[in-house]
Length: 191
Image 1 (cartoon, rainbow, N blue to C red):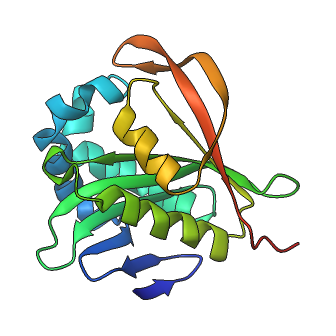
Image 2 (tube, rainbow, N blue to C red; image 1 turned 135 degrees about the vertical axis):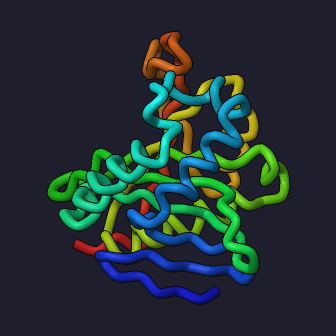
């Protein structure tokens, strides 16, 4: 696995997929990903306004995300095919807290065409390793809807542990949805 990771950029590659920091120049790529997967992702995501599905909307969003990244407060990563550059998914880290918690929350999406071949497991492992190694996070939290067995399988495969149920946790597709809460602890955390 090739790794180029600093506090300002992420680039990791396992030969088949690349995990990299989103850039303002990616507005069209990301917009097209969400347009292409709109129907597939709708049951799993918050309701989106029409601006979310425009290049300009993504240009504005990426401008803000770049600032969060620069300040170390959030990271928005793209999963792409190593050979073609085709976008396969996203991984984001938010709610970063350093002393005394050293924790963050992870969220992700994967294209319908990339389902079922281990892409998210590989990408999420690279992303969590990056947050542990470069940002010294102690705990990475994730939440998923109880009926999302694919997401559950990915998180369990990576070693996330069940911590509880959050009732009416997130407004997903216009409805308050319960979520299972899990976390991954950094075994190599250093104080």
